[in-house]
Amino acid sequence: MRKTIISLLLALGVGAAQADTLALQGNAPERYVVVKGDTLWGISGHFLKQPWRWPEIWQLNRDEIKNPHWIYPGDVVVLDRSGDTPRLKLLKSDKVANRGVARLSPRVRSTPIDENGAAPSIPYAAIEPFLNKPLVIDPASFKAAPRVAAGPDSRVFFAAGDRIYAVDLEGEAGDTWQAFRPGQKLVDPDDPDGKRVIGYQVDYLGDVRMEKSGDVATLRVVSAREEIGVGSRLIRATDAPFINYAPHAPAQQVNGRVISAYGGVAEAGQYTTIVINRGSEAGVDIGTVLNSYKRERAIKKESGKEPTRYTPAEKSSNVFVYRVFPKFSYGLLLDSTLPVNVGDDVKSPS
Image (cartoon, rainbow, N blue to C red; front, side, top):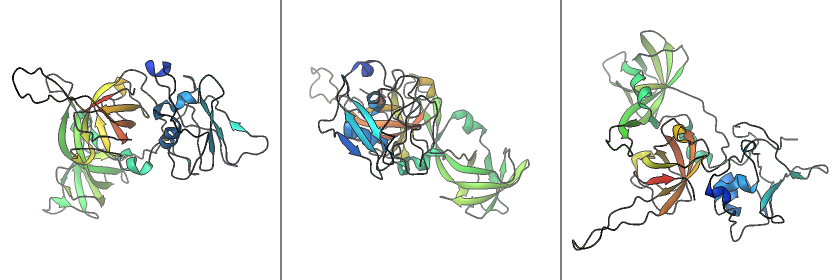
């Protein structure tokens, strides 16, 4: 019999969000049978108008917020309206006579996606490319990154199977490194002087494997999305497992900006990865949900006598943070209603 209750569904909202009455969807079902392809975010949206408040409807306290549980296809989520506030209960599809409604018990853990097909928090395919490949790197890592210095001949671009040489590279034979091309410098939009560099946008080029260490290391190009050129930088490959992150409001008020969108698109939409200028130093953690808002724009005047007016700061999307660094984070756009642009605001959900 498979495992039942273990990690998923974390973290409470804070401040005003905790005091608000949980807002149910007008057509919230009394029972929902989980099907293959469901996500935690999607299931939450069947019941709640604010899906990040899922932990509250399970009545998890601060000690329990890191003990969510797996939900599998065939399980039944039951809405209980009998108390002062609504709550959810879980009926396991493989329950036997002595097992009824699944209950939570405190454990603190972060758990990778279950092999038996548990519902993930958000669509795995939408974030998998960014779990272990660079999109933005911090200035210190950029400065220290080893570089591709040459090949065995006069060529300056290399493809899969080619041998290359790198300098400032420490490691052992068999180590895998990711090659990237430095891109745009990302300056913190909240810095009044416009000088504080948060990181560097990078283009992932491919993987290389060390064959021989040394002052000039020998490597082999294992795979190449694009040609790897002399001057390309290297960063050690990491095998970051996909963890079933549970959506939750941040533990403190967060106000930030969108600083990049994957692919350099002018207008980002549903399931696009964006980068925001807030990270762990600002209280953002994995599973944090923020709202994005259109940046206010001055309305053109028809005469000098008109007062200065601005367009409303309309909500455009939910942002589910799935990878966190000290000063920036990667977030996935969910339930987008308007395009999201670089420079738009991100705030604690409301």
